[in-house]
Length: 157
Image (cartoon, rainbow, N blue to C red; front, side, top):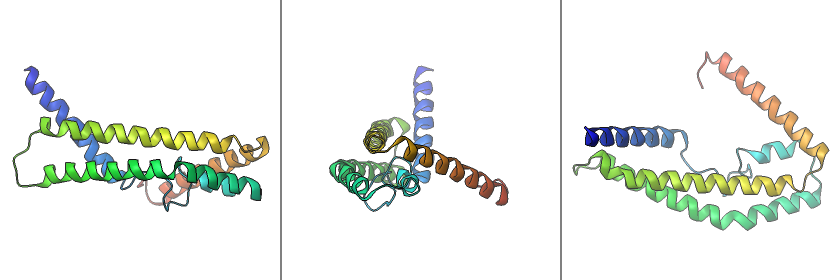
C-alpha cells in the first residue's frame, strides 16, 4: 500500500511537471526576452518614465545576472530534455524513475524565480516613489486588459 501511494504521488508530480512545462516553454530570464525578467518587469518600466541614467543602471543590473540566468536556463532545458527522453522513449520507465528529474526541474525553477526576484528588487531600488506608482498603475491596467481579452475569447486563456 505504501509503495502504491509513493508511485501515485510520483505520477502526480510528473503530471504537474509535464503540464507546467507546457505552460513554460523557456525559463523567465533576460536573454532575449526584452522584459527584464520578473514577470515582465520591463514592460512596466517602460511606462514608469525612467531617466537615461536609470535605464543604464537597469541594463547593468540585467548584465550582472545574465550569466546565472543562462546557466540555470541551460540546466533546466537539459533536465526537461532528459525527462522527455525518459517519458517518450522506448525503454520501460516507472514514475519513481522520474522523481530525481522532477525534483531537479523544481529546484531549478525555484532558483530562476529567486534570481528574477533579486533582479526585480535591485531594479525597484533605483526607482522613485512616483515611478513605482506609475508602474503599479500600468500593471493594474495590463491585468484589466488580460481579463477583458479572456472574456472576449470566451473564457479561454
